[in-house]
Image (cartoon, rainbow, N blue to C red; front, side, top):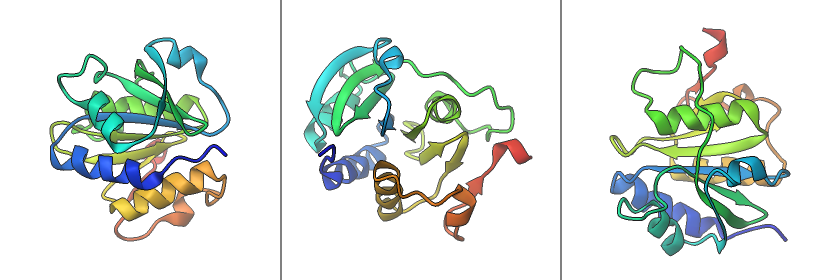
Length: 170
């Protein structure tokens, strides 16, 4: 089965946020994303906390750019993603957040970004994004995506703690 230990990922996210370590993670359910993988360094690694923290460590030669997780494995690191051209994104969005939204606009992926300036985490899907989530909610969204059990639209899954920002509608 294509699953990985989601708790290893969440533990890594906890550390990345707390240490304000930038991260960009593309989850792909159905497509290998070869084109994007080839912009970086191809890997075939287990998804675990140590590996994720090693990749995104600022001293690591792999830390810049995105990693791609496909079929439960880290398939590539240091990948270049398309940057969203959307002018309605918040001004505090840096390159990572803009790339997360950009990648989600053009591929059927779920993309997670953590800002190294603020430690802010967002999830992007279909050009929309969620922010201000608890890690439990982040975990739930990732599992829903991977198991193809997402709500039909992100508006349906909105609650007060989780503003969905539909950038296109503004």
